[in-house]
Image 1: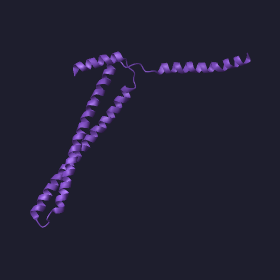
Image 2: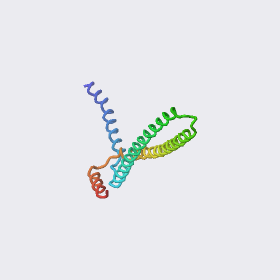
Image 3: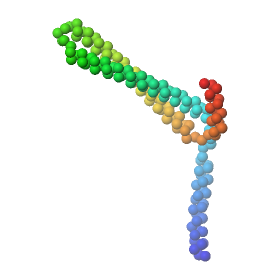
Image 4: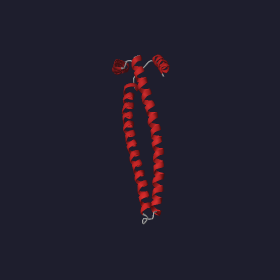
Length: 154
């Protein structure tokens, strides 16, 4: 009998702690997003995904341009090795083509720098959308309505 009383006394604080923990969890649980908030998150997410697709395509285009510039640079290097330095016209022609190549490389680097700045801005906005929208609960019926409404607008 004494053991049962001790076990009961030991179990009571554990049961009380479990109830308080559960009650605390329910008190701090976020309410589901409203349909308007969900619509805003859906639109922002769609915008971020569309911009990412454009940035990825731009990166592929820049990579192809860089590969062409590298091939042109290698061709100019081979020509420089065969160049007759005593022929002033050949040297002037080579220098003109080399200067033009260097201008195209500088322009490519400027374009890549601009794209990197836009990619950084995209990453910040994607992180913001994720922080504001990804962890919040919502009702599936609201998502269905938002998707249906959004598909009629596109």
